[in-house]
Each structure stands twice: as C-alpha cells, then as structure tokens.
Length: 205
Image (cartoon, rainbow, N blue to C red):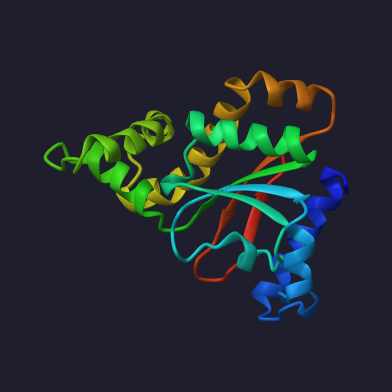
C-alpha cells in the first residue's frame, strides 16, 4: 500500500488526465482483472462524494477497478453510515487517504440555501430534511460572517464550507479515525470538483 502523499499525487495526476480528456489505457477492465479482484481489494484512497450523476469519482480521477473505495451521498454529508464505511476501509484495507469531495452547483447545497433564505420553501420529506439539517451549519456560518452575501455567492461558498464541516464531523465522531490520524497512518483532506472544467481543487491545509 502506498502512503497518503503518494495516493494524493495519483489522484491529482488522474484528474489532470481527465481534464485533458486523456484516459489511461492501463485501467481498462479485463476478465483477468475482475478475477484478481474477486480475491480481495486494496483501494489506495477513500472518496466520500456527492451522489450527483456528473461526479463519478473513478472517472474524475481516472482510476480503475479496485483503486478507490467510493461512498456517495447527496451533499457529501457525514452521517453514522458514512463514518462507518470510512472506518471499515481504513481498518480493513489500510487505506491511507480520505477525500471528502463536494462540487459546484450542488443541488443539496442549493436546496439548503433556498430553504434557509426563503421561509416559505419547504422540504419534501423528513428524509430530505435530514440532509438539509446536516448542511445547514456550514451555510449559517457563512451568513454570520457576511450578512450581505448574495444567494448565489452563498451557494458557491457553501460548497467548500460544507466540505470542511464534513471533514471535521468525520474526525470528531470517530475514535478509530482519530487514532489513525494520530498514528500518522491516515490523512483526510477536502476537495471541490468543478463541473465546468472537470478540475478538482484539494484543500490540503
């Protein structure tokens, strides 16, 4: 297993290939590859991203079968099931890197902003409300910093704010991940994918 720094480099290089519309042919699926992976897996990175159909992690990072452990949920929120999935991959496979990735023009972010700014806008169900509730703190934090922020600016900035909140929630709610971080065998970073350019910006600080 490669280390977190090497894993991050692989993701960056893969994303650059994707931006350049160049596919690495070594990642083509073969029956031999499927048979090999049937014996076990060793993903080098965990990607917790949005369910949006325009943001498939394997394609965005130009990686192949068995390379990434991908968890997708609307708004790339962090709830107990997502935390458990990350813990499983870290403990079972020794995966050294977790990336929580949001994206521009996120429907879950936009719905949350609209809900908070327009009191007459309701949430369709209690299940959808659970997603909005988890995104709300990131949006409210931006509103407290700048009461004059426009709705469009708020939606744009809320993507990164929500990612950073999700990173913090992942750490704060998992003794397993905290232990792995303290032992320097795990790195967690945030990222934002741009729908227009295809580029991923990593928040490595």
